Length: 247
Image (cartoon, rainbow, N blue to C red; front, side, top):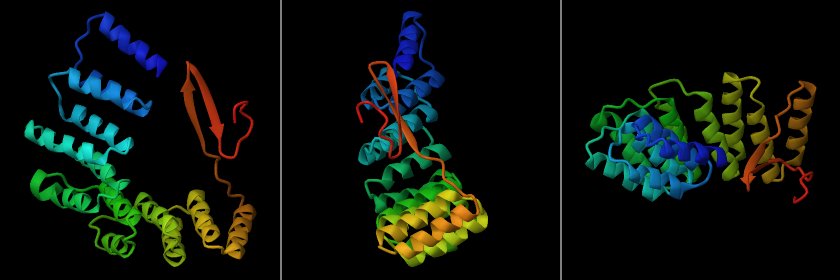
């Protein structure tokens, strides 16, 4: 974020007027770097806000778990007579997912085409499956996928598989993983998720079989890592890594 703030300061020093492109970029930068308040400061500091500025701020609130605030901002956007686009709806639906705002998610999805003229795409379907699945309504996303007007993608099945892990549903998890591997035979993440479902439900024989299958076929998932910046220094952490001096 230090570099992003330095660029922002240079924009101010050069007395550049924030156009919608710059505003959108700054909101995205601050939100993704973890400073939601600065993102909101940028958003409130400008008079002109196009659909991308509004959508970026809704996304920022969503990624920080502020689902209700994101929905409120969507309504303020509507009051400002700015027409939402496909990206806006992806962000609003994401905002409904983690806080479990199922009814709100359903409402927005159902209003997309008839009210706003935005045809749902694969990302919107994946978001709806995620909303329903996280809430534990596992039968509903299955029916939802069956009625989809477009072919379900790996992201749609992946969202349902993630829900099966959360709610420890082995039988559905196996079916979904099978569908996912038909689309992407080398999707190691799907196998790892299924293995985690087996582990959570104490099915260790299945875990061993699946891990053996992965070794035989040379399938290996890239280790997940994350990073954080502290006082200008970037620290990188791998999964199950104890090498950092402050681990």
